[in-house]
Length: 224
Image (cartoon, rainbow, N blue to C red; front, top):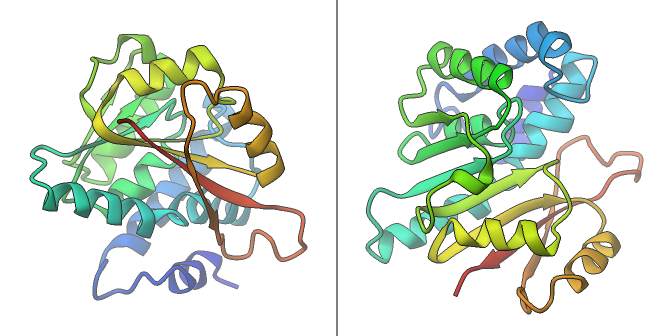
């Protein structure tokens, strides 16, 4: 089975709305396969694993994040910016940026060698809407990000959450890719003094949960 093609169909991406997305993603997957062992980019050994566990997982939140971005545009936001915090190999930032070329993305990554990989991908894929920043979260300018996305970053704990909220503009969103809802409840209970409210949205990642082993959710937090 062509998991990438079929997965994009299941996620409601069409050739009419995203004409080059499938081809661009194949190029990106090839780069991940080529450099994974040297740069320790993703936890996967085969192309199919990368496609399902990383590419389709990243794009499973596309329609949610696209809606948030469009709402901000409607509200008059200018120079809208989405940041992928702890981008690593560019996930979810690069798949999202490929699907939203009208929005500026920042890939925030502290490891220089991974930034070299990200910069290579940006050039290869012609991602004029993406910049790579080789800095730690603590050095990101305050109140400059509309939406921060991250997956496989780290658990949300008090100090880290304060840093994440600090870089958001007022009314901005954290969008965290997470696993089981029970773990999310435990995690959020520990930081309820700074995040008393959040939204948890189930994600349907094509082919990932066929055996019932995996569960994916997106946790949304809005900065007042």
